Image (cartoon, rainbow, N blue to C red):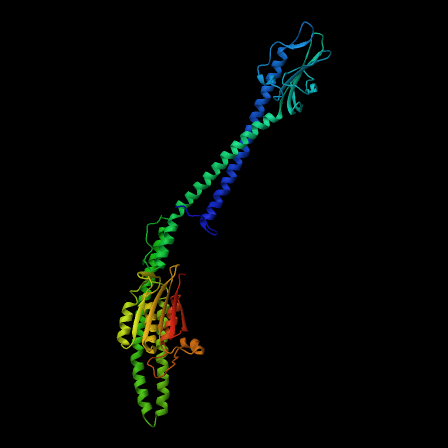
Length: 450
């Protein structure tokens, strides 16, 4: 299938270059062919007229009564047809002019015939400008006999015009065929780039982990280098997550010890203030460590790994875990025909965002939590988590994503969940929005196609 060129594309540039050369080449052929044809047809007419004027001189004689006559008609019958554009004339002083039957009106200018040498010029004829040939010869009494023959210039123009029209139509068809052939060649030559673009699209959608396909030797090194980079990036992401986990584990143990000692100091009367201050700082440190570790891990996972998120497979294990974590809540899943759809997102980060949002909804819901997947025609998706809880005051919605924000200190949590969810969503190029509905809070992930 031939793809049409679009502005800014290589196809359009190549097509413009091909079209330019076709126009220049066809134009050169058109001008040169018309010039050559006109030259040859004009030369042919001149040679023909010279032959006819010589024949006219040979056939002209004086009758016994002294009048001019032809011994026989000229060999070209067009001189016998009235106003055919082919004329001849013989004049001599003291004699009645002798004219061709075709010249039913007007006359030829005998001044062109003023020398025994055959001369020619463009003169005015009976039916318009005419190519005129003539010469003179002495008669029996020594008088000058003027032999003139002419052909309308329009006859030459008619032949040239007919040839020009036929040539123009033929060359226009040839130009169209050449441009179409050029488009086919361009499409065939750029087909490997189309396959590479399709492979990139599959990689972006998470349908594959490599750039698939065989490519020409000019493109194959690029595809191989990109595949090597993808594998290296995947390994780097895995190492970053392991290092983030190791760092979290190595920090939590000494931080737990410090927190325990701070609690003991706070319980002592002589060091209560110091212990309380130390306890507040350790809790702030714990919050910051958790938050920064989450940011580091999300930054490491910003580039999709090629695995993708498959709906609803990604949500089912999370919902089962939430049902055990919040047994008195009713978790429901709605997919609206999005089954088996794949999103080009990191599945680990996306699962964590869903876990945070569902856990947060489970804490605040009175009874029901709904996870809803809605597809759009562009291949994107909106994911919403809705609970029937009290919601968030409108003037406090902007503060919900701040680190450490807790609307109810009695509710379990660290105040980091939504902040971490927002950073993970931004790392995946997904928009996370909170809004109060009729019966509770709705958190929406806009995973529209990008």
